[in-house]
Length: 527
Image (cartoon, rainbow, N blue to C red; front, side, top):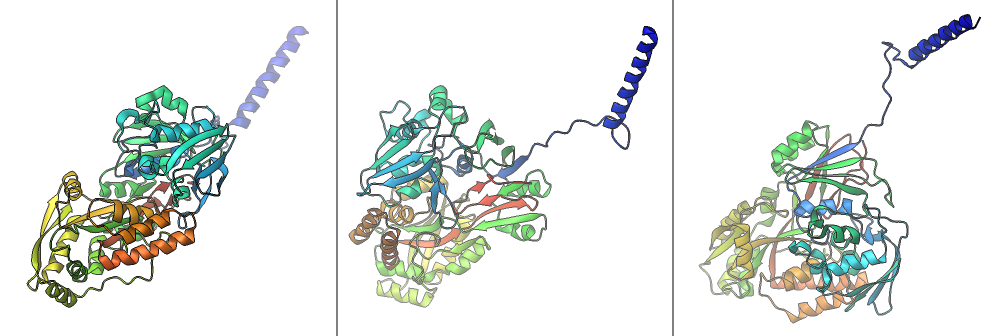
């Protein structure tokens, strides 16, 4: 009996195994189905340049800045790309003292760095003072060059101190109007003190922040890879991995996108515009850039020390035709030496009209009826604010010739060109600027503090100081509008154009953004 019962049990077990196998098999071929796992979402973006550092305190070049907004967070961030309104980030809220000198930030208490250590007030103090305090043990870490925070805020900040675990005070030397906006810029983002102490001079290639993505791998001149921060304090991204691929040639970048090897590209040439717009598979992004391409005038070099000559110069150039030819739909004419998207832009100012006859009259009044000879210095390389600088110089040369000004175009390598302008060895030289989207960074730093023009004006200085000494946006706007009127009147610089920022993404991708600072943002990408 026991033997028969055992046989029956064995048969029953075999039948169950058969039924189980059939039930779990593929309905069409009867083969076992592989267990389903969610597909990893890998987003690949191709850019023209690689980073030189992944340390937000020392990031400065275009190939680095995009990355900072993914790896790190600041105390505040920009809420809206157009208005650049500030909203809370690592700071839940903040207040400012009556005298405008002490800003108090109340921090979130539930945030961790990618290395698992706690974000707190000590980390904020550490992040700032390692850049601003020459006595800090990690000051000048790794000799990485310019610290952008130092450039923006070293003259403004007196001290950053942790009051308790989650309260930080930033004390200023004087009231500083742009302070809160500057706090939203990547150079003021917070690093892990533990990571800096652990890696020392190698921190630049071992970054640790609190951002929505954490660092995985950096293969120089090929790619930077990041993975999602599953413990992010904010909205967790829908993609698992971002690969920032280096593809220097713009034609190759577009082909990579068209073939589906990458999901997005940053920056296109005007020649590619028609192809992109004609494609149903590609979505074009274009925003007015916070930049300026301009001609710097040496106000102490004859004959440009005469206002009438500078005014003649402005009337001699057909700026609209130049922008149409050089930028081909990816730029706009500059009227003032700051982008029109910024606070305080004076839209009432009328640009100098293209009027060669008036230019000749002004030159005659200045004692130069037959014109004059001059050197026009230009750099050879494409830059963020102009793709074809030499072509722009040749258009200047042609227009100036019509009024008797013989411009010899001198093409320089970038380093030589920059030194030449700094040493005032020019009459007129092309140059450009892209910076934090606040008027102070254009009208003060560019016009008054820059070393390219040798121009001094106490009236303009006073207006600039008044604008910096108030945190009231309406008051700032009033002063900056007045500054632009004086700059136009005196022809302090020759504004030429603002280059648009561009990116292209596969049409199937949603949530990819290009902000008014030129940064590509993948925080909300999905596909």
